Length: 257
Image (cartoon, rainbow, N blue to C red; front, side, top):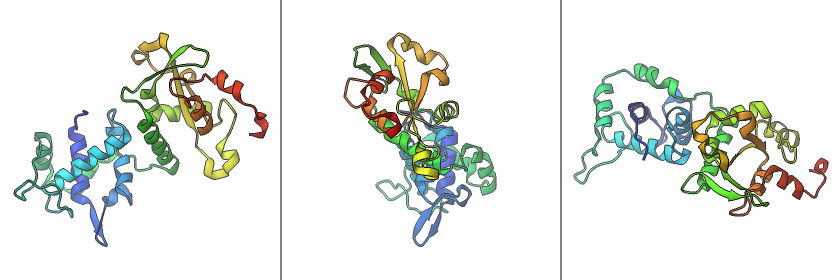
């Protein structure tokens, strides 16, 4: 279990204290410019995720926010109560944040946490995070997955690096958004709606199982695929096709794709 840092608790405190009510619905603090709590939580994922999956991070931040609700007079939510109806238990780090920041102005607290939030989370970024959440939910409990190629060579698919959104973005910057297998480009097919969309794929040979100890070479370790080719590579359990193996299976002329 990933420990919640003091910064994490401070963000949760701010969300609890300065959420506001519109037509009986509590919305995130106006500083975030978010209309949904999920959007507000995800703005802090890159800076505070600390290895959590996106879903786990959202749940943890939401629970931390709920923890403060019953302790903050300004909160518009009841929050967690104990069996006697009193505010729920706070662990020491959460209690320290509550004690230190209860009398500090909203502006000062915001200035302390604003650099942790990605306030310019554009639409393509949200789609990438949604895609990443789906991929994380498809992972095995151990994270990395050992598979065979169709020809029998052993490979390990390193999912931990695909979680790093910064690496994904760098891969797109270097390789573009066209699929390396079939050449499909979402922007050419869907126009502006498809701009900035593709998936990143990373295969690591067993001989390089020590990969976690070296820096990822984005140019050579990561490739860009369309969703169809990515799914075809992983279609059968225990078999992960290489790029050449998948290309060999294409029966329709590429120019007709």
